[in-house]
Image (cartoon, rainbow, N blue to C red; front, top):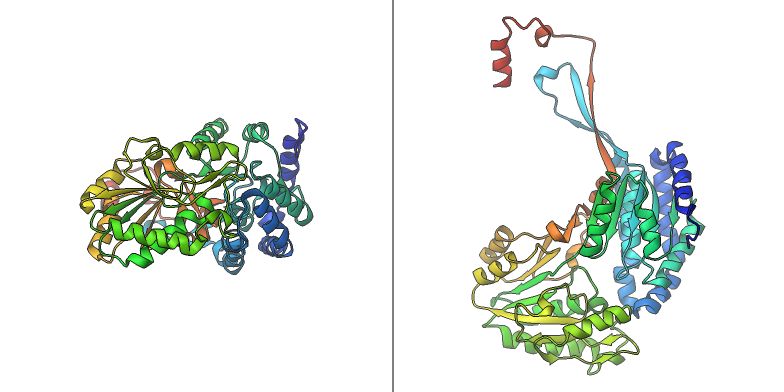
Length: 459
């Protein structure tokens, strides 16, 4: 943990010297560091899983799927890095001949990655993959709320990387504030919108570009033309994964009134199938991260009519998978991102009504739509705006590495995953190369008699 006031500036000074040495610009160096990162995850996966269990009671299966699974992103970067980093030739207009134009990806320099507590390992490592691939030095700030995972990340990185290259800084709010006072070449923040605004304000003082991966209330619209069993299963899994503490979890359902009752019945069956008659005893259901979040969610349980779940245990921060009906649109549960295992259900009469409601809210990070009707699918894509859309499933869009992941409006700025991560942490340098073989004089003064020719060129 950083305790001395000068520790962060000293780390930055060391990293500036390391970056200035040019080591990180070497593709072979970057590939070696990515392979070292992958091996570190593999060598320490049991300790990582134990830490996630201690922080969130995260089931081992979910830890592999949603945290250790970052290995796939590392492999993808290793496979594609040489191609990503090559200069790309672009078309050169006739009047620029003889000459050629290129785009050279180059590293930004020193970057800061601030990670959240809900997927504390994956959401630390995933952006770092892009930072390493692009050739940067990095300071990583894990969330102090998920303290066990923060500790294991610090331990792993200390063994794997030179601190002058990649360094972990642990600590609370004061540490974050100290980091945000420094000059970086990019800040990458994952967390809530309120803190995202603070990060952006601090970055503006140094003209530091930011990537903000935030969240919001991701709607899930369910048409009547569906496979009820599959829809119920996919919604229940996506909502209650990690006890609902997922930035792209379905936040609320908008359900066609004609399908509402059979869908709810099927969802209830799925909850029992997944977690048993008493989910508190299930080894497959996580817990709320801390007392603060538990108390906040407890207040949201007072909204509407609980039709499944609602049970809580303050000693273990347990909140049962909960379905709530008869929700008022101005109730507290509809005013903030839920970020827990509580799912409000709202019925609608026609698709235009559902679309209108979604468009009246801030743009979400994800939007889910279940329907066999391809015309309706196209309407959703054309008439709504969100960070991403997943049709007939939930959460799984994040598993497609080739798809950039990010928000729009209040749900975020910028994107990452796959090549998008490399691009986020790179500067695309434009380069024009001219030859001495020929020098056409039309552009030089005096301009007399040349205007007609220029007009033909310009069009």
